[in-house]
Length: 280
Ligand code: NAD
Image (cartoon, rainbow, N blue to C red; front, side, top):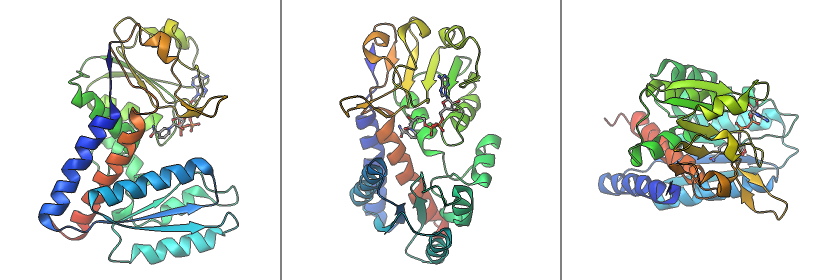
């Protein structure tokens, strides 16, 4: 079994980005908006800011109270849309319930939508012709590439059908010529379908969602889930200790997919900068 080391792979990607930025004197700018005081969101935002500093980007944080209105948030986005120092705008989800996430994401200028959550970006991923990569799924694909894991012709099973992880993950695997099955909470015979997977990606958000009896001998197992266990520690969806005995490759949580998501966000921000400045 080979442990897929997301820290090393993400570091390599961030090093490449930092080198390109330094060599060329680029100044990509990312604005990160956080609304309310969700502790998990705070950790993600801090990590994104840290990655910006590492890569030599300019970054700004806008922390709005949970009581902020949708109008205030959209006004801020409109201001950032025309701010020349800012190439990418990221609004950390989830937002408080009184705010319509779709409307907020739609307010971000397409050239600055580095999270690629807008309807247009999601559609472009489906067609396979996109500027900004869906961060978490593209991070998974980068891990597969780094470890020379051949995807073409393989049976890939994705568990979870969210718009930000499961669906775009299925699309990227399909573009890489896998035969893809997309499973979800209503899937019948989940265990049997998973046992057929050469590549199994779990994006459920539940501890124990993937047990060893769902995994084929020699399968590649990618755990996107980020959950807190009873001790408050981070844990994925996969029963890691048992599944690692069967898998050929497996990602840990933490230190697997998580750091990749941020590295791809940095890559998207650099792409946005180059496009906004007409650098090719
Ligand atoms: P979501 O809640 O939007 O989607 C969960 C999906 O799991 C749904 O499509 C649902 O149908 C499916 N599901 C739920 N219970 C199931 C079951 N028992 N069997 C099969 N399918 C089931 O979540 P999301 O935003 O896609 O995130 C999924 C997980 O990935 C979460 O733990 C989240 O924290 C994590 N995540 C990690 C990263 C990262 O960078 N590593 C990024 C985004 C999300």
